[in-house]
Image 1: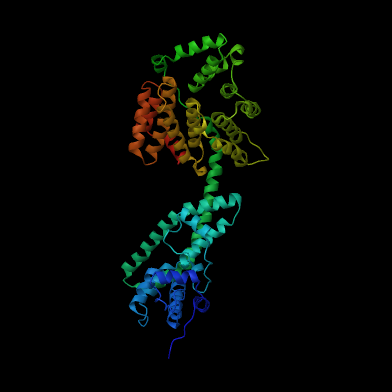
Image 2: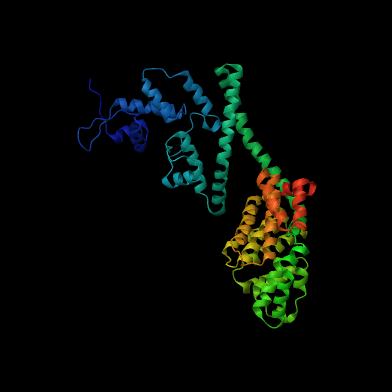
Length: 487
């Protein structure tokens, strides 16, 4: 009896397999080549339908990948499936929501696949009609369907979760096969896996919630003590000996003399020089004749250097910043002062985080690289890096702090001759000192020691050398506590 022939549309309807997937199976050799009575015609028969039903059962019920299915088909349809395939199916299907009987997710569109590949959730060769891939794409599609911050946060969460979940699964597989090796009984190990599957899935969800609660509690506790840490996020000064060797006093006196004579450029340069060296006392003593020559950017520096009661500086800085134009360092300084106020002034009507978040947003919205003035750029990088390491670790600013301090080094080391030697020494020394401390206590000891050595060599008789020696020889409670805060 001749076999019944059918076209693609009928094969698609009877098998329940989409046309694109059938073409994929044909290309992969999972289906026999159809007969072709004409150049544009392809006819299929019952053997294609039977094969598609088998493939679908192996994928959706046994949860097997294409490579395994191909080996089964190459062995011949008449051969009963190997018991190893049942074992493999049990091991692969761990979470209860992947049990047989649940409908497979709809095949995702091209945009969802692109996002999933960019996030590293699926590989470029993985097919969206594979049940395991389809389930991942379904979660990505759900995330893509969100709006605004919810979409951004969820996609970022998927991106950082994927490699960690991958390591978790590898560890779970090792535990499973460790049981197999100890017991010598695959069937018993599979029964054990199946029996505890629901408990493990519930544990992963509940333990994640517990860890998030712990992080929030630790953050709230750390925030209470963060005010003092942020207050102390100030670069160390240089020794009098180093300042004499590089002629800092003579340079300042020359600028001061010209400023008193009415030179606006000298007046502004003097403010920048003193601010970069942390000479707040001198900035507070500027005469009216000099301050009236200052441009808005220099006025911001003077305002930030002078002691001001909590909350009193904000309005003045906002007015100066409005006239200063784009000024990343000013944004960093204003945000730092706002952060100190938020962390240090109790307010019964608002939580600490609620007050601190706008300041943090302003702090990290600044772009030091956008400032063409190398001194302004380097100081913005340095100060934000120091503040970043002073913040509680749960805020996740340590990596950005490293990048900021490296940015400060990159600026001062790439502009030889444009900055005074004293300014370069203070910025470079403090950046290397802070990086070295973090790296020594964070597992990168060779890199950290190299940075600490270079920081100490900049000013061997000054605070930088003493702090570097303390970090290398005697990492006491203060440094350990600082490292814990910044991890």
